[in-house]
Image (tube, rainbow over all chains, first blue to last red):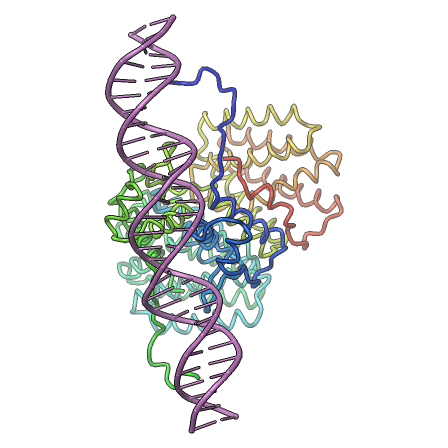
Length: 256
Length: 256
DNA sequence: ACATTGACTTTGTCGGACAAAGGGACAAGC
DNA sequence: GCTTGTCCCTTTGTCCGACAAAGTCAATGT
């Protein structure tokens, strides 16, 4: 049975827990309630909204999940700034379920990482460069430990993104990065010179950052990413494969 | 009272609703449960997990919020692919709360939109170009309606991203786009030639896509984005302002 | 002054309850 | 034949009341 005319919009009836969640969300988004402020106890919310505690608790789950509300160490409810990491890992999960290919991942990571390198060269300060150097030192000591090297590589690119002082870029690159860089482990395992080329590229990137040379940073990042692709193919993989669900494990439960 | 030794890790006790949510999440992520499959009724889940219905319902809120589970038209629970739009709008919300600046937004949108233009030129098919042409026709008819033009501009860039056939890029650009393009309304309201330059740039972009000319597409996107910045400044705004909470409204409740 | 105790609060979970809405079967009416 | 109305059953959304565990806080004892 199909409607003869599409004359009316679908009527949407909001459930109580949704209304409660929306109300609290508005309170936070509008700035009337600031991150860190206490949201009040469940009982207090019951009283204010005139609904049952079960209803309030369902609303809290929604808000908790979107990161607007958090339970403190004392288990009480506080308004909170949504953290990036939680969002990124959920996006990565979505990408896995949509079975995106390594080609899509690569093409996107390429532009984002090159942009990150350029902007990092313009904005990096001494503190973040020190962190990059520390990462690099550990990587040079882990040339024959693929798992560790891959983890350090992921961290290197996260630090580089932070060095841009561009939080939008930092967030935009993370979902792809979470899926992209773990494959480094596979590559350095299969391609003998992979580890050496990786730390060499990182070295040049750090030097470019120190010199504030955006063009040089972009160049070496471009080579670094091209290397990844060559290594991926030399390891016998096809760019048009979808990202395996296996990677979900490295993304599902970020080690908070 | 402080622990004498940090001998043990903090013991993390997962609550029942979290365990239930995790179990169902694993079922979906592992592929044992596929999008579209029925998850079963609340009562059935109670029986399987041996917990109370309130507990099951809290778990469901968590899964619903992360998009892994959806209520069908019949209100039953089905496994589901997380939709991009929901994720993007939550990220945009986070960016607002973190008070990112228009400069961060602009610098990120710039690289993402240029990359989208290039990849769209390589991958666009006739169907999506037809949609872009339709959008363009409406825009040309709405030159003196800033609100509508701004909406069409947002849509144009979404279509362009879809034309790349790169879902990772499509998702990566959306959060910034959601916050970036609505300001078009302000700009065409304040800058007389703004509307004309906007549709002209879109015209050149469509032509470049038809010709499969990535360089030309990148060039015109670059000009288009540069125009935005000039317009923003000519409208008397400062790039280093944080994005106002006002924009939350255009993002909070995406018109599903 | 400091550790202990015990009362009070809050959360996590449970059991049971009911109205409203959807689905299906079946009879009545055009 | 197809629609409409009706009845029944399932499922969801919400509510009530309850209790154990864990945290808070103030009074207590030494």
